[in-house]
Image 1: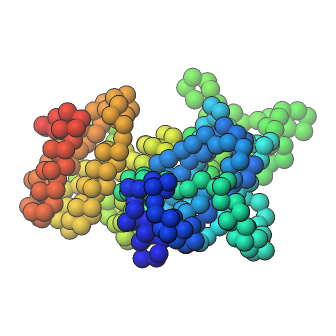
Image 2 (image 1 turned 30 degrees about the vertical axis):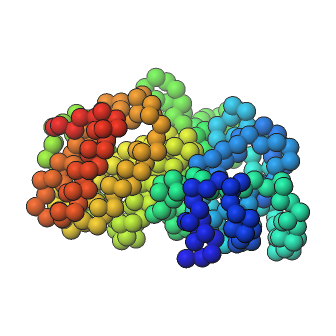
Amino acid sequence: MNTAVSIAANICNTATSDMPQEIALCLFENGAFLIFTGVPRGTEFGIDYKSWNVDSEFCGLKMIPPGVHFVYFSVKTAPRIGFFHYFKEREIVVRKWDAKSEDMLIGDVDEAEISRIRENLKSMDRRLGPYPYEHYREWFALSNYITEETVNNLRPENYYGRITGQAELVTMETEMMEDENIPGCSTSRVDREHPTRIRFVDEQGLPIMRIRPGFQIRFHEVQIMPIHKRRNQQGLDRSEDLEQLIRSSGGDWKELLAELQFAFVCFLLGQVYEGFEQWKRLIHLLSSCTTAIGPRNDLFFALLPVLHFQLKECPEDFFVDIVSKDNFLTTTLSNLFGNIADSSTASAALKEKSRKFKNFLTNRFKWSFEC
């Protein structure tokens, strides 16, 4: 464990302003930095569990503990734009604000520029916000399976790796013409040179929209059955689907939990609805397995605390309109708890952990899991 992470683990409930000076200095010297210049006053800017409205002096963050973090920002009422980054010890990440697009730019930053910034860090100190260590424990619990490899595999392929709830959309016909490199596709116009244009519309006659390639979060494809099919196939075992997903994740079940955490953070902090949809798909898959519970005891044992911290950190009213709709979680988790309880190959420790988690949800949210 490197120096900054070790210290962060010991002071993770302490606000930076309350730290002993020697600890703050050590974190300043060993933590990472995010330099973000030109951000307009009043912009919402956040990292992990903390956000601020910045003033005109703001130029980034200091003392960031190494590891995965989610950085996000929004101007006025615009949707949040965010990105995951795996910060290394003493790393300096540079972003610049583009006033025209109201977005971040990576820009051309060479080693000489990084060295110049490093030499001036102490003079920039008052303009750098400290990482919110009082929320580090909660963030770590939500992201402990996400690795640098996870980020590289799942983030969108656009240059910035940016994630936003307002994805860049194109019509289906524009996407086809761009794929086929048809002249004039950027405008999709109809004229003498382009006398026809294929149109794709839905049942209401509206254009079929697609997320522009490079802007999709690269989640694994996971099918979720319609409610009426679920009701008619209560005994369906999706263990083979689970094994296939693990194989496509490099054979490591920890990457499956990493994607579950990645999707949840995209929704909770990035305000990206597709993150919520993928989170639901993965939970439904994991809750629909029976024969896999014994052979994958370690996976299910690790799954329960992941779900525990995700649901524990949600606001009390979070589930009223979104998660509780159609009783998705209560129905799905009832299957999970029942499958674990009925399994002849699940360990006693897994059954006990499942029982305690079920009781926690019943006490906190007043959910009933009686099938």
